[in-house]
Picture 1 (tube, one colour):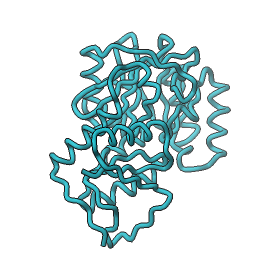
Picture 2: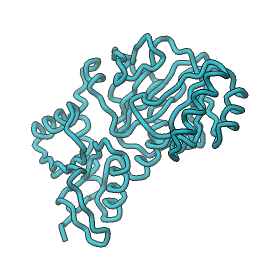
Picture 3: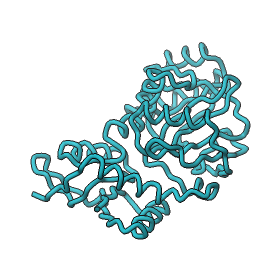
Picture 4: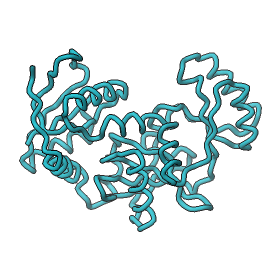
Length: 289
């Protein structure tokens, strides 16, 4: 059994996955996306049974997964799941279409229409980039003056990503949100991410604490992962007066904070799932040439 790991750099999560694979007697083939060169008309990739995407550069991962798919090499996550979860709009649409409760969201294409949407939703709102992670470039808009300033900044920045205005209702959460970690058809661990700041991502200083996996959390996390066809995912939930709602879904999610809150061996669960999936799909090693 050979598992390819697509990566951009080796973080603590990748080191733990390598160690788990070694302990389980599974060979790991490291594939650094900085070194990749592809001829689109010639299949050329290391001989592996399945590929786990742990890349940090989303565009590289998406292109690579699409190529591997065309060559019949199974991947976790799939190209479809990855491209959906890398785009907040596509994720939200998948959740809505599958009846998964999520936050009210509005989409606009100009500063004027974005301001109209913000005022229709009512202050405060959260303005997000349609792509991005680690809680970056989020803005909590408290009044019209702040809205006008932020919208002007985004217009001047001028890129395609800043010309799509993704506006979401602000929910005053109880100093925390929830990260539920899905592997296959199980929620193997969950944690509260706590912070005095309204952004609770661990990448922004949030602290992880154990969260019991209630039937409601499990059911909602599995439905969310199923909605985007994700095999392994971090599902972020928020507690609202109307119950739990899904904020977003992360493929390639970090779990260094989560492992401090659980007795579950997350890296071993990931490797075990990859071995089972490779066996199920009957993968054939991809021959170079």
